[in-house]
Length: 379
Image 1 (cartoon, helix red, strand yellow):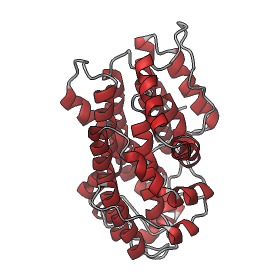
Image 2 (cartoon, rainbow, N blue to C red):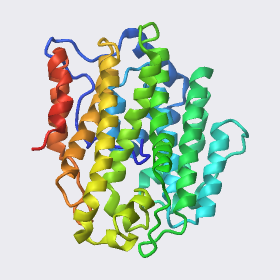
Image 3 (tube, rainbow, N blue to C red):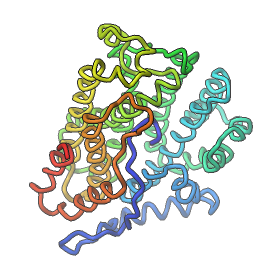
């Protein structure tokens, strides 16, 4: 989701990619039938929300959504689509904070089913630089109508995760409401940062797990408490990757997510963080958060490996953002992380390589497990 969470680079990967054994990563008949039934129940216009528009607004994360089993793809796709809508509202900086907070509240209430008053985000949609995000806000009623097409239990999971996500976005808007490039705000403590990472990404791991548990591996014998704990850390890790990668860009918007007390303890002021020469002084603190992100993603890798091996699609959908995330962390360890002229990212060629290796090595458990360490290594 575009919740400041990590997203893979765009890759042209066919959803029917083959394993070396000759087995295709196709859905089971029951899973495929479940997805088809949901789509058939929608109007053709509404169905495009989970296909074409989803692809347009989800950018590279669409690759991950495509590989998911049909039994959970519609639920996760709709949750992502609604989260993109809330994120688009929160990020419309040309519109006042109060208007954005009001729009988020109205959308959250509609998602929760507290009222049925039609939403009109005309002013917000007109301010979007992206045509796909403009269309998403214009068609928000269609997206909301899809929610009731799912079983009640799935509706509740979608409502729960969106409520948590929007609470994090609202907190973010309030905390950084007066932030500008010459008024850098550093309002968070370590507990605040952890809570924010949970609200906008860790809760997604919980949602993902509960939906997949219900529809993909309901009878598998798993340690559910450990699985959910690792799922939360998985989401937090992806969130921290983006926070750390986007530090120089956020600073120029007046935002700093690193805790204020630790910045002050280094003898740095907010303005100092705009200078690339301050990087050596910041580096030890920055590296400590890289280590936290790395540990969270390692828990995410344990999560992916704890899922039943027969759930190839779900495990691959988890593996790709993890591997790309740890490759990003490896690059952040050697770059000047205050240099706004260079945005650290993993190249498309390298992303393709990570994805292809994860598919080719999947039948070989030991080799597949080693992918995390390989992606983490400095090159």
